[in-house]
Length: 236
Image 1 (cartoon, one colour):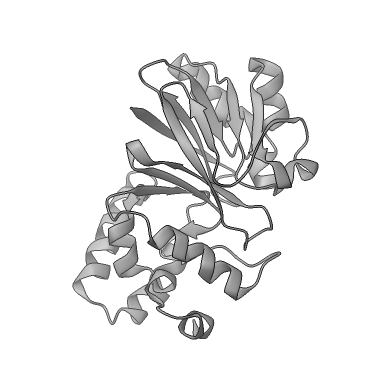
Image 2 (cartoon, rainbow, N blue to C red; image 1 turned 90 degrees about the horizontal axis):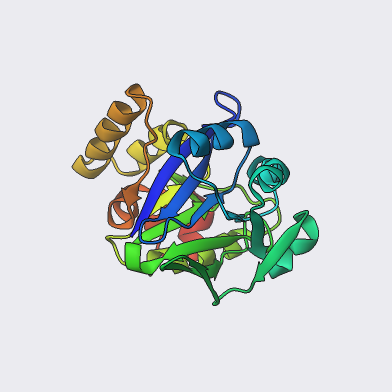
C-alpha cells in the first residue's frame, strides 16, 4: 500500500506540490517533483523517512530544483524519462514509457503525456489507484502548452480518461480556484460542479490541498476532460 504526503512548495508564488510517497510494506520512500528542498526535507525529517529516490515528471525548474540537495542529503537516486535525462541533472534511473518503476512492493507504470513539455511522464500506481499528473492535469484545468500542441494535450488527456474512475490523482500545483469560474460556467452550475467547489473551498480553508480527487469526479467537472473531440478541446 502506498502512503502519500503532500508538501506545499513555493507557497503564494507557484503553489507547487511535491509528494513524499512511502511503500508501507517496505518503507521504501520516494519524493515526487521536489520544487524546493527545504520543505521536502523538513517533511521527511518530521516523518522519520529517508527517501531513496526522486521521481521527476518533467524538467521544469519548479519540479526539479530540490533534486540536488535531496540527493546530497539522502543519497537518493534521480529517476526520470530517458528522453528527458539530458535536461535533468544527475539523473540515474532512466525509464521509458510503458516500463515500470518499482518502489518497494509497489510499482508505477510510466505514461508518456508529452504536451506541456516533450517527454513529460506520469507515474501510475495501478494497484493503489493513484496517479501523479505533474503539470498535465490539475483540478478543473490542465497544464499550459510549452512544447506541445493542443492535439498533443488532447491525446495525453485521453490516456488519463481511459483509466478507471476510482483512480485518484495528485497534480503538481494547486490551481483549483484559478479554474473554478470557467468550470462552473461551462457546467452551467450543475450539482456536480457545486459539490466539487464546496469540497474544494472547505479543504483550502483548512490549509489542505484539494487533491486527491477521483478521475470519475474530475471527468464530470473539468471542461478539458469533458471535451469529446479535438475541435471541442480547441474551442475551450
